[in-house]
Image 1 (cartoon, rainbow, N blue to C red):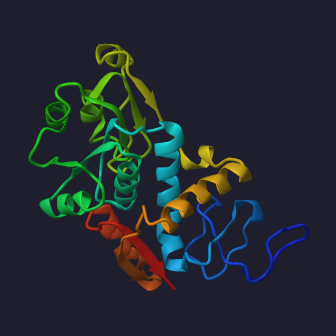
Image 2 (image 1 turned 180 degrees about the vertical axis):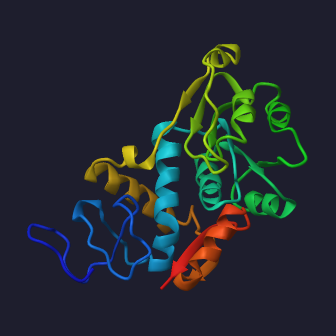
Image 3 (image 1 turned 90 degrees about the vertical axis):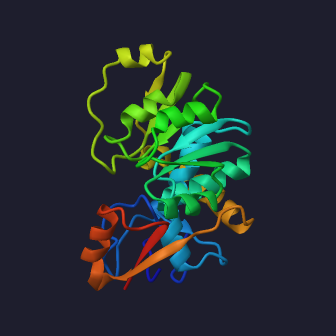
Length: 256
């Protein structure tokens, strides 16, 4: 931080990060509202902060507040080998929950298993919902965390136990199709929510509490950040091509 306005608690020289302060990350300097910034612990370097804040605070609200996952509960998480997915698996494991992940390759399956998932389903070879039923003794899972969207909606609903919750927090494959509410009744009085990080960090207090929970997990070692791609800003087009092609795993950092 190089300068601040009047009445701001932060001072020039403070190390800060953000994940919900608006657009404009592809720039050398930004003018941002101080209330959307978070002070970084000394032990968290800038690359780690860049890789983890958006993804990690997404995991925080999903796993602690949108649905408070408990020890002994089973859940399904799509795209388990992605940046959010790898953090989710570790956090769920630390809570004592059973995390089932979906991936698209054997390589990604190994990566997910190394990051806390107890079971991994390769959706290219297996019927996701049928495998979930098999893994849970026919019961299904209490909650599905779905950041993929259109391609996974049917499997997500079919994997839930009665009165289970589908948390549809993203649409990597496109927006899910319109949902006939009768499907929720047919599935056993199911619930669906479409949350966003912005709503779960709407106030400065919520934002900083979310960041504090994330940093606590980082500093106690229950979360590790897996930065598997680094691109210079000049190669940002290639970075987006790789992300859209699902050619990346873990976190991606863009360098100046």
